[in-house]
Length: 486
Image (cartoon, rainbow, N blue to C red):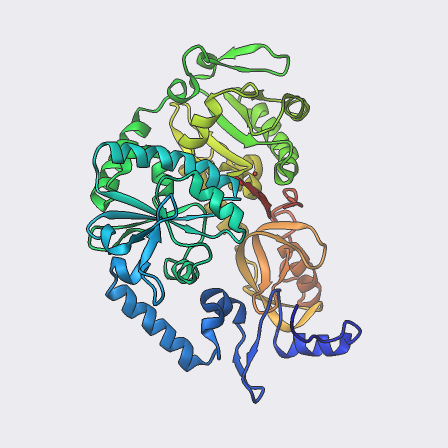
């Protein structure tokens, strides 16, 4: 770091600063003016949005920048997007200057890419195919890469693999466009219409799913694609997505082939997972427990493992732990299933109903929250669970005081997954929470003390409190409790 610091030994000073600026998480950046007055305590957001342009970070200057951006969006044109004070051209694949004026009147795709990022590299291959097909058809379409690479060699390699245009390496407009289009994921393809106005903020997913059919990327075209997808979903059967030519089976633990036709009419879970993925390995024991509970109550239920493992040995080792069926390692159906169910990260759990239609692609969240009680994952079952939870909390006080957190009252709050600050165990559904301090208690832990202190208030809650449903400890790239393609 090129700046000064509070010495590590000055723990008292650090504690005072943490308390003064109410630091509850890091990174946390407080911006002060020359007199030591706080300009903002959300400096991380400001630097992320404006970088050095945000200096001196005063409210007046930041408002001025916002007004400039709003004005630019109201009067957006191809030139306002791609031309800067020092440059009025883009680079061709041969690294020759192409005037921006030559692109006017065309549909333009701004391709935000990082050549060193594997997901971008894989998507580039698909985009090249679509680009060439559109060119062969004589469509007035062009792509301009907005490279996020820090390494010039990676930037050059990216140009070599792409037959279209790009901004120069580390062009200052790249940062401006990242902020302007509020870039949040890679790859991203922003579409500008022939008039230079934004048609769509990201068509990458549409290109992956529909290829050239997504062109010209207009609202009308996306409405048509949605109707096509809807019709496919209505006709979907287990065989329609799980059978491909002679690949009409899955495998059991002993390697025996189980015909897909034997699974028709059952409730099916598709488990996208991999041995190398820490969140997957953390979730699998929980899923095994849930699988056995459901299976004991309903024999017309099955689960199929869809592996993203990198070799047969890893697949075999991981599958040996599982009590269910699997798609064979390296099976080509895996790619089509990942596309159909939009698998962007693992672990992912997809629920299929007896008719073969998709019930939900978010069954993993339901298993984490409700365990086997979520089965069969339908909207009707979720409504029943919601009613049960509302009944559970009847008679509980809305607010309680607690000795471990005397400075604030704790409020009864609907919650997803949290860790109780008293017992350290995971909790779900209900918590007594202090939002200001990010403090959570199981209702059981909060009300046991409340019962003693308030003459019985909260009695008999122990049997009603949701039990700990397991713990996902670790966080392609693994981030938190999901591994994303990388």
